[in-house]
Image 1 (cartoon, rainbow, N blue to C red):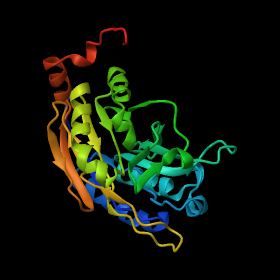
Image 2: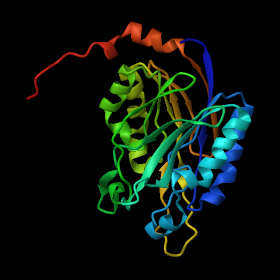
Image 3: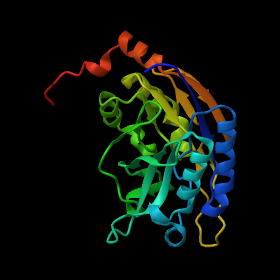
Image 4: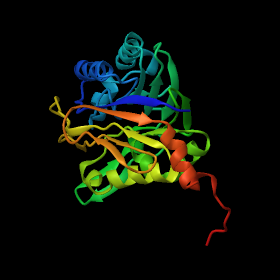
Length: 283
């Protein structure tokens, strides 16, 4: 596969009201399309970010009923673009499952859902004595990787998946030429690890890596809501050789990059590590 693919990474800072978040999301997607992007990607948690479980349970919907998904599918069809909805918080398909799912979607230019991916690795961490997360208490982890046939073969992932390189190697070996890592990366770990991990995944696989991100403080509109979260921002596009093609910084907006898809074959021909796995015995 060859040729240039103009891509737009949308950087958001959503609050906890999906209806209030949608207009800006749509406006930035339209801006990206107006600037020539044929593939546009939004961050993890495009519909909302909220630590208030009771509030989430009231406003989050099943996939078939979700107004954000419906509106963005219609917009992709209106604009005639490929749209990666980084992820949406949704109610699980299984009525017996009380937890939500964190689901990424690739939308085709006719508005159809080309692929779905439920985030596999849950952000269960203790960063410090005052900062910890337990995503698996609220979200059910996915169990299957997803390789989508879009404008190029695309391997889907979400945020904390970034720390598990075996997922990306499997996607690349299955044919991925672009890897997507939509995120709402914590600002502490983002400052320490975001750039180096994304560049490493690109270098290891010989793929383009596209990482649209949430940024800044996430507004809380409800008295019961805990203190707002802060996300790192810096939506990033990385070449198969590990070069940073664009960095969106810390503010809302759109990052436009041109992907020369020939660069995938070039990088893999120079260092064919993706095809050179060797069996070994563990310690």
